[in-house]
Image 1 (spheres, rainbow, N blue to C red):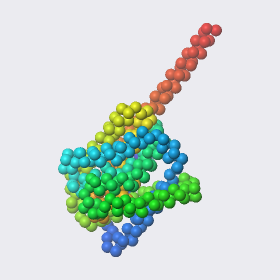
Image 2: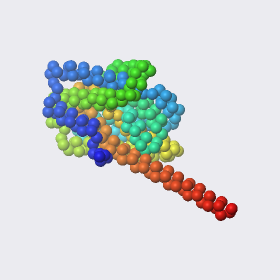
Image 3: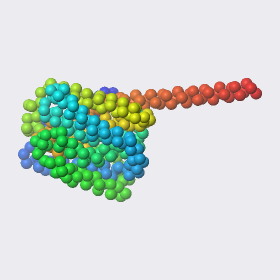
Image 4: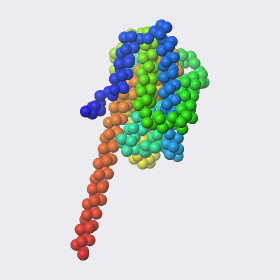
Length: 347
């Protein structure tokens, strides 16, 4: 039986279970050090496998569509941060300062890769361009995200580190494993393609480890005592407003700039989403340990909202295009039969 489209998926349920476990049994004391090492190894392995999976041919195929990529990157790294700053006087009263810091961090993150491509495919958009655009966003985000964080988030919240120091840490922990995976793709690429379940396990497992560690630290610092229930409700409103504005802006811009329908779909899905897979490890590197839990909470909520909304849009647009194609094929078939009948009458 298919899951109703507005219910959380299994991974979201695992995230909720992980937060609950961390709230009841947080890791602390001497156990925190080996757990932190385990988390770092899992994150490095995640980016190594993503590097081995990414096809260079797919990048080359979509790289020439530069106008589309500029629009997507502008939405991801310009529109979202501007929205986060401009709307702060209106939206920040709905949440706590710590949660809005997480909202601003969310606005600096790159786009998703897997879900952007999947939704573009379902909606019958330009899939090669989506592969290239989402992948480029992830790579650029390694450098742009910490720089944006240093500009729009307080240094105290980011642990007092400079943007260059943060970039260096991200390069060592995320980019180096990714490049290593790319270099070894000729050797292990086929194995990765045959065993995609391994990548999914590492992908989701590493995120769950980071979330558990982050929320354990936050619980030890009294996260839930400083986060009223009304602020969590306000966070839903903030996330919904950001997503609605991003969807509306990408729809309007892609249409006004004269892109084809397939390209419009790609721009909308790649330019309106934020990556949980990249955001959680980056938060661990950028922010002080005590702040990570509150920082990733808005990202987790936004992630679920964007999945539900974009899944609904993708299914609706894909079904509409398929119906239009069937109707067009039916019209052509009827026209052909009419021509045959007319020819037979003349004979």
